[in-house]
Structure formats: structure tokens, C-alpha cells
Amino acid sequence: MYFISVALASEAAPAQGNTFMELLSSMTPIFLIIIIFYFLLLRPQQKKLREHQAMVSKLSKGDKIVTTGGIFGTVVKPDGENDAVILEIAEGVKIKVKKDMVSELVVGTNNKTK
Image: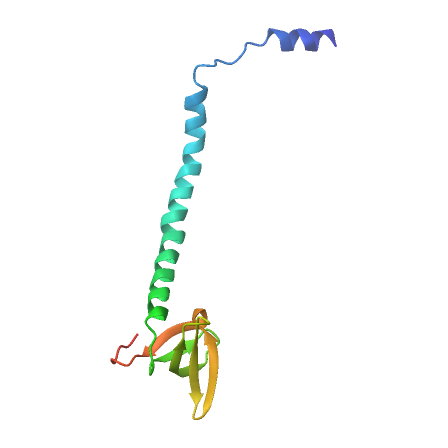
């Protein structure tokens, strides 16, 4: 037991001057992974979200849309009060859908196509 404590006591202490550089060099790969993650995943997702919000805010009467559930319909009127739209999915059949559930604009009133 005495030999172990002597061996531990005789070990030289590590140099304290390079700890910042060692820390920086060990953290560099983590920073690079975070930057790559941002540019490959987060930034394109934010761009898609902005485009979707712009498309949904421009919905008007007569626009033909598809919901995330796969329902095709024509916008009868936007319901800005409830953040929804009223769709006509068949003659005389109208449903109210949240604007967030609008997946894509098929044909707009000014002949836009996606």
C-alpha cells in the first residue's frame, strides 16, 4: 500500500499552460458538427416553413388546394378569425380546415401552378 501512494505522489503534474488550446482543439469537431447540422437541416427547414406560411397567408376564394390528409378542395372563403379556411370538397359539401393543414396550392385564381 505504501508503494502505491509513493508512486502516485511522484508523478509529475501536467503542464497547465496548454489547457485552453487542448480544450479548443477537442471542441473544434463538435462546433463543426453543429455548423454542418445547421446548414444541412435547420436552415432548409426554416426556408420551407417561411414559404408555406407565405402561401397560406395568400389563400383566396377559388384557390384549389390539397390538405395534409390528402383532401382536395376549393377555398370558399378564408376564415381569418379562426385561422382556418372553408373548403368545398364536393358540390354542396363544405368543411372547415385549419390553415396549417393546407399542404399545397394546386391551382390559384390567377392560374398559378405548383
